[in-house]
Length: 226
View (cartoon, rainbow, N blue to C red):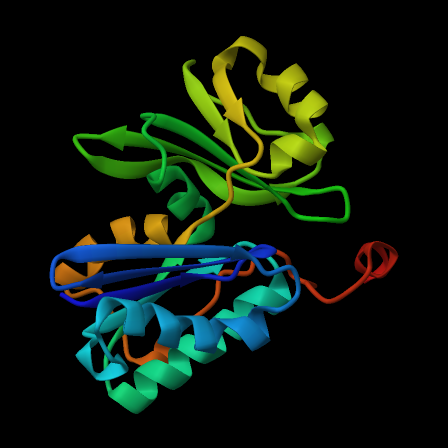
């Protein structure tokens, strides 16, 4: 299948294109420029591969958790393209995509959720397939969940902002940590391929984002009062 995947869940923008058996990857530190950059960069990526939008069989997106604005921009672009091309879409958990890019078999994916909180999930690779063994959640450093076993690789920006709390909570259970790793469209592609082949794709209008905060647009004090 010829597949395009996107990740707009953080301050980075990344794209992956699988075309005629070859894979092309691109990423940028977009900051707040996802809206301006994404479509032109998709067109450039396709041009670099000698492909066009009409060659695509499906599009997949990292659907969260992550930046509310970035996710909405990415979802709107994917839905618009897929609807116009009449091709199916898929959503992939952002934290799962982060884990899928790792060579480790036990990954604790942790992203900065702002407002003093973290997006967190744990994944284990069994026979080449990833299983979520610690459910996706948002929590403060004082409410970090139990982590089973040892030998975990910690990935993501959460370790940059709450590294001390995470190390204090999990200690020797963490074998290695990479706080600079960000979710990438390459991880989305790795997980989306099997889902497309299994017939799990959906029409563009059914693509949904994963929000794990009830009040994503409110300030901390407003969320407390609501």
